[in-house]
Length: 402
Image 1 (cartoon, rainbow, N blue to C red):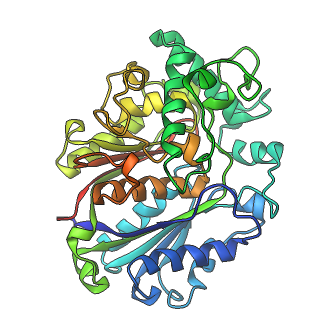
Image 2: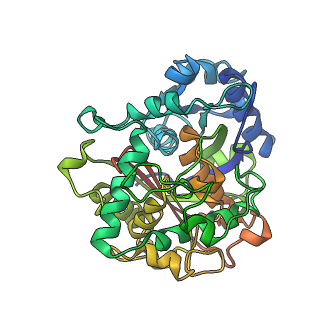
């Protein structure tokens, strides 16, 4: 029987711009921040993993594990960097869990981050587009300038056609999430107020991304700097860290699945690999979608807010958008989904995203998010983190530690 594992601590930066922070400084700040949450020295941690996606091309930095090991107290320990496109953060958490399960320790750290802007906070859109584009299949890049917005614009068009969904229906995802972000002090778009009409209608700030396809500016996630870190521990690890179970959250279920990178090989709207991983996570946790009233899902584009709602089992196939239209995804709805603001409004620092999903969900279950975003009676949470064109999927199910 597997050991039970817990989120013992979570820490994140504000998402948006890290300005002049270097990659080594980001890694160091991640460790200091999460260890500071529970006044633990890094030396008590047995293992580690770090997830990031753009560092080779945007920051000219590799061997991130060595940067984590450079933090005093972590040298000489089992640490590696993981890359699973936008699911790298979730994969980093699973990597730590697996190390603990095979007996390499009782407590570990998972760090996720991305530095996508320069020291002045500016971004090079074309360079970022090329950098992220390498996580698609080469046969599906031709003719696409900004590869992933183009790919998901096609997915959005397919979803709308197959299920009879409108652009306005999907705009409920972004409108809800911007409203959530206004109350989240860590969110990149916390100062930006938009209405449903702003998100649904064409305007100066809301333009079509690809000619002939429905994706608009407010349908898209952000280009974001940010870092996040969790300390994962067994029951023995919690004791060593001095963290009571009542102050921890159990990662009760977790699973990962990967589909073919080629969209032509599969029906991405049905997201079979994601559904498989989510089902396994629920089964491991001994819970069902009905038990969950908190979720963080990978809304890199509004259509993924709809599909993700279906993956976590809160809506049947093709009805994910309607769940948002009906207000059931609000913090005061049937299940508070992306109360953080999601990738669309909280921000999407690629490697940090999966870590932040688990961390924010843990805060929800512990009652530590701002009151306007707190789900009343938060009892269990689901997270769904993807990489590529719904290719890699990392899913977790969380419940209170005690």
